Amino acid sequence: PDRTRFLFSTDDSRFMFNSDGVLTVSKSLYLKIARHPDVAVLYFPKSSNGLRRRKRDWVVPPINHPENSNGPFPYKMVTIRSSEDKIKKIIYSITGPGATEDPVGLFTMDKDTGDLYVHQRLDREKQAHYPLFARAVVVGSSIVEDPMEIIINVIDMNDNKPIFEQTSYVAEVAESSPKGTTVIQVKATDADEPGNDNSIIKYTILSQEPKLPSDSMFAINSFNGAIMVEGVGLDREKYPEYTLEIQAADTKGEGLTGKTKVTLKVTDSNDNPPVFTASTYQGSVDENAVGVQVVKMLVTDEDEPNTPAWNAKFKIIGGDPDKLFSIETGTNKQEGIIKTAQGLDFETNRKHTVMVRVENEVPFAIPVVTSTATVVVTVKDVNEPPIFKEKEMTVQKSEDLPVDSVIMKCEAEDPDFARENPVKYKIIDDPDNWLKVDEDSGLVKVKIPMDRESPNVKDNKYTALLGAYDNGRWKEREIVPGCKLFCVCSEILWSVNNANLLVKANLKTNKAAVKTTIFNMIHVCSIQCHHNETCFKYKTVKRSIPNNTLLA
Image: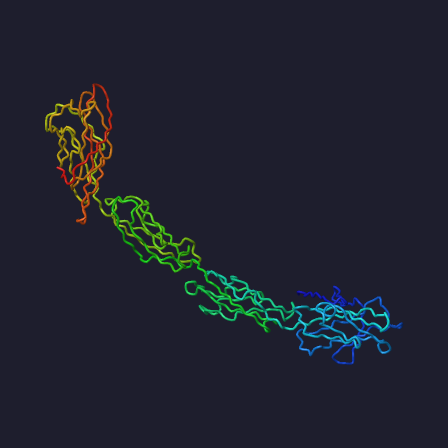
């Protein structure tokens, strides 16, 4: 079994404890009890040779006097006597703190009777011990007894209540804190004598506000004042703050008391997931548009606003294997914005369905079910320009070719197959007006006789530009460069190359919408070379065509 060890000690220099607990006397002692039942009489030791200086101290037990005694004052504490005072005149005196040293006048001794008096209340918290020395001198002689040491111990009374180090405390507790989490430690001190019941403090919680979800959400260690989470259900959104009244009582909780207030602020933990305001969102976007907004997805979050536990973060988790879409968080941190990352093709896929998940910037403090939403994106058809089947075409014809002779046939397709718009053709640039094209079939023919000596035949080369369109009217346009030409000796070469035409729409404010006609262009090039020479030429043509000019 466990054994308990005790350590004994004393403040009285006249005694000492051995390690085995035996009390021994370190100085000679002499005590004679007075006849008065309340006042002790202390005698100097007898000597066969009368009073003379001793080589050893004569000591008496300490005198215990309670602090804050009500008197009456002066109050006689003890009488000092010499056994020779019946035959000789003895003068008594005391020295030491409270007598001849500060605080002077607290203790006095009647020089004739040897009575020791205290003149006012003693306060242990100011001074717990007064070591005094009593002296006895024969009148008319220098013969004295050795000083008698008198120790006055001020006995502690429970006259001090516990005092908290702070009149109020403020601390924070995370709403996700588990039971047993230490929130704050309060501390009170008691000025009474350490180690006895008057200064042993016990802590208790007197009240809790609000008393929800239970009246015991917190507990306190009665010995060290540590406040801990006790109950479950801390919720900043419902109960953002608690006020506790704490009591510290001495005498092991049954004596004097002191109080303080503790304010506990419940801090937000990421215990509420963001939730979409709808399970499905609809959006639409023109095909080929890149970086445009498709839809905004709003969410709500019950955590503290404008914190990482409230700020939303979005992710596309399904339905977008080709990474056609991107998603970002709006500036208010409570909306997800889906945009096109690539151009969508109406003819390939008219509807896309993607799945989006929302979380927060910081991990969840507790297990939660994350919110997801479905986004349906409808692709709107846009009138796209026709595309030539051949990027490059080369023909060889003699310059004396008769009028209406076929030079070549150019072919283009409209990618907007759902619109079923017929493709038509138009000569865009023909410097000498040698050519004509059938707008429906794309057949290029000789319009007037050709002449290789024309100033527009440079280095035996002649160039023309053709375009393909589906419907509408001409606007001012720019031709995207791109024409690759080849030649064979002593003949005129015609090369047709695909080029894109950019259209600037001429919108009118008095109409709801204006149909935009989109064109692609091809160059028709004639090249005359010397015998056995090979030629390669690149040329870009840019022309402005009057507004409202119908292609024919």
